[in-house]
Length: 130
Image (cartoon, rainbow, N blue to C red; front, side, top):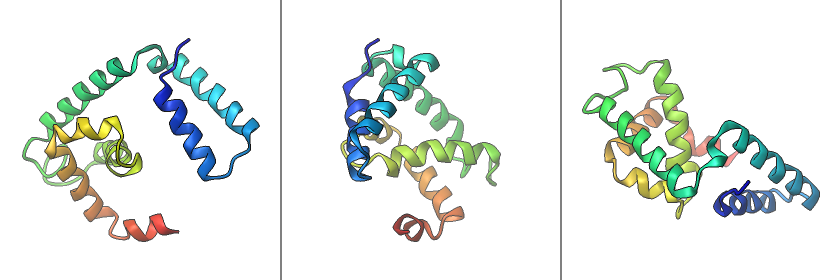
């Protein structure tokens, strides 16, 4: 089973930042690969994953269109789920992420994320600092 090295290096970086021992990293790395393979995403190449992600983001961007939220003027439960996904891409992965480039193709997604963050997470920076 091949697993893209980008994800392995990301996990290694995270483990170093939180001072995780090597054996814990090895355990996590093995399990992440196993879970990704079982889920199906680990069976694809990085370009295939990025293509699938781009198609999914395009679909959501089209659905949002010029509406403030996914289904209209007010947020719904689906907005919460979608926001979690986009927040990770927009602010959680850091600069240089290949997913950052995909989101740049769809400015409506960044605007949507910022709108959701402003409405529900006024203390965003404060929460991240703690």
